[in-house]
Structure formats: structure tokens, C-alpha cells
Amino acid sequence: MNDEVDEYFDLRPVSPRQAFQPLLDKFRGLRRLVAPEHGQVNTGQDASPQRWQFGTEAQFCAEIKVWEAMCGLADIYLECGWDVNAVGQTAFRSIEFIEERSKYMSEVVEPLQEKAYREREFNNQHPEHCIWTRT
Image (cartoon, rainbow, N blue to C red; front, side, top):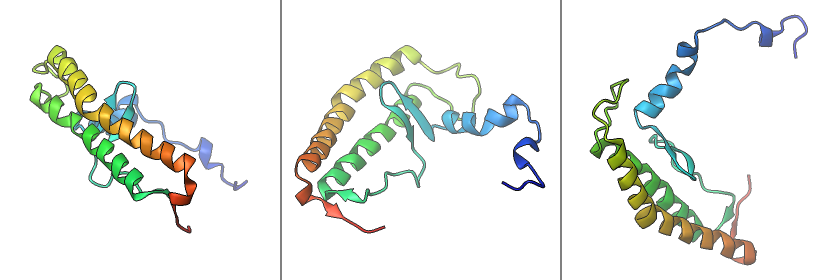
């Protein structure tokens, strides 16, 4: 830390709206999604999962499929009336969305997550099958 200038305390005050607007825009624009019990999903073009230093090709492919399926939640938002440009979501059919999301999660996402989990467990039990890369 530089003793001459303490930049931590030299912050320009901004309104809560200014501070949170970029994050709100990402959620409203469906570039970030929240899925119950699954955390947040970044759906941006450069947001696909990165290959780990340790693992198998099968594990990486399984995790990519989970991410792609989670990104599919954005389509359900749109089908249920979500307007990415509106602040107030007056046309959004939330009850229909919750039903469709639950169905999609159980029929599409959860089976893929189970497969990815099995691949991770296999890797943990059989590390000799994993690919090691240097950083």
C-alpha cells in the first residue's frame, strides 16, 4: 500500500442506482440467471466454463452440457413474457414460468448434472485416467 495516497478511502460517492445498475442490467437482459439451488449462471458469449487443469474430456463435456442447459432458462423467461428492455415486467407470467422452469430443471438440467457428478466422482476415484496440464 502506498503511504502517500490511500486510494481505498478516496472513493467518489455514487448513488445506489449508479452502483447497482450494471448488475441489474445483466439480470434484466438475461445475461445472468439465478436458478434455485443452482446459484447464478453467466450466459454471456465468453462465459462458458473453462477447462480445468485436472479432469477427463468426458467430465469437461458433461459440465459444458450442464452450462448450456442452464443457459436455456433464458428461453423460458422469454416464452413467459419477459421483456429484456423493460424495468417493470408487466407481461411476465411468473406462475407459468415457475412451472416451466421446474419441469425443465427436472427433465433437462438435473439428468445432465447427475452425469457431470458421476464423471467428477469417477475422476476422484481414478485419478490415473485424468489429464494433467501444466500452468
